[in-house]
Length: 391
Ligand SMILES: [Zn+2]
Ligand SMILES: [Zn+2]
Image (tube, rainbow, N blue to C red; front, side, top):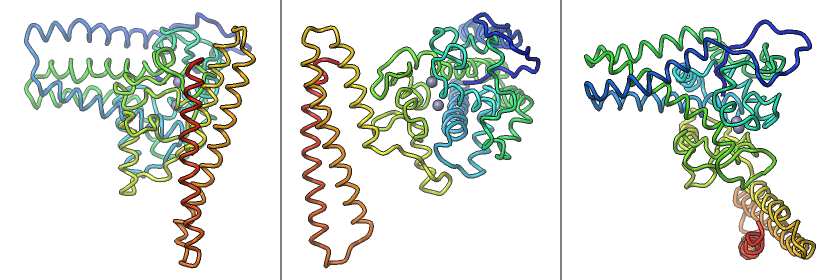
């Protein structure tokens, strides 16, 4: 997630350094705002108390800005996981200014590099391989490997064609400062509690929303499970999903970054996914990208197989176990192929609304579908029973 400003002076053939150059404006801003949030804000509360409406406004502003980052900066602009009309894009660009994480163009550029070079010490802007501090905020406070930065945003030609993105980019700093100062100030004057609103809905809300977003780069690459791929450090984590509007299903997201969902099951807490879907019903969003279910299931099975392989490699009967695992895995993949083909045939027949003379065929298709579904369910159980013993 991107906050740091771009550098204009760049040394030719500069060697990447672990240390980097401190960015003092960021160090002072993030340091000071954090200090105020953990000292002045609680002191004010003990001394004068807080009115409930202050916290209500702070929560509202936090949710608006963090949803703009998740739905807008991340899924819409970084990954093009869906399309949105101008009104929603404007709204998300506005919320992005309030989040104070740099412009959508800059943020998306960094984020595309993160996905392309995830965990790479030098190329990933917020690589988790360099530890919690660096991936959380260290990368914002000092500039490492300056040659890496995409000054012209060449990775984002699509975004350069979006007038809303470019307008926000041009006026980003003035808009961000104005919103972050004016909104709490106006609310404070309206409620007759200026300093309380400035401290809570202004500073505390901003620090809170910053660090929760930053957790996706730090904690979501350290803490959680990896059901879809172990090729990178990204993790699925329910707690982080709750705190970040659904962004915590980061392992799935790194495997299938173009899916508009991060949490794919109905019970996965992912408000951004719900908003995007709900907006599609009224035409505000469209072309929602979804990864086919069979592809997801295959990725999960393959990851489990690799995990089991790794864990059993040292056992004396490793070869025998591997043979068993491979047999079950092959059967599972075969059953999946049969099931998803039967399902596709059935769905297509339903869509085509075949006339009565082919009713027999329709009956056959649905029988096929039911039969393969049962077979796949049985094989899934058998596979899981075996793989879980070793993985
Ligand atoms: Zn990541
Ligand atoms: Zn992403």
